[in-house]
Length: 336
Image (cartoon, rainbow, N blue to C red):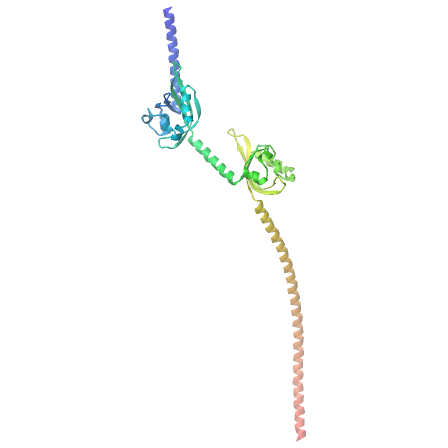
């Protein structure tokens, strides 16, 4: 009886030893790839692995015996949320999420982490192990991308569609441009903004088919607002894909260029009218010039004729002068 109990205890110890060895092996594997730190139930650092120290810029001896708050902004450590964090962990409640912490130099480090209370045989929390991944680069990219999107949204009209063309969302700039409220257009089709002649055309169907193939479009588009007034938009339609490469929406960025197009058309019409007027004036001027040339030619002919007449008169005057001289000589002889 004693031997059987002894063997059973040995088997239990062996199973426990194997389980402990396996757990240690798993923990070592995790430690090689993840940042790990251990606290007591009050938040005092017990130990940290190399990955954690490298991530936070400390040596292990610099943080042992220090409180978790050295990794947090001071204002946060005085909040009820921070106090609740450690109360919940001390009660054995695990916590996972994305956390902003500070490294040795006071720089932001973003961690995807889990705080896991370790329960002892007395069902009390013995320590808290935190396993974390540094996702700072991803968070910074996301923040930068969001900042760019916000900047675009402040200066441009933005609207989102499903791949089928139903409206998902639109910013204030777009709503102001088309004179709709958001509730009036969500769920409606893109064709709401198009003239009937366009939506009935094969080109319109081909347009949405190409967007569903992931093709990008950037042109000047003629649209209409809530009251049927024509709008001109300089816009781009951008297919957006999810992590699996599936198209899940189309985002349109647009600028209202109606005033510019209207001004250009007015200028073009004015230029055409001026051109027509100038052409008429040119033709009239040409006629006047031709008439003037004809008059000058007539005057020239008259002057030529006059010149001939004057030349004849001059010759006649010479003959008359000769005759007068002859008569005067005869008279002088007669007087003698």
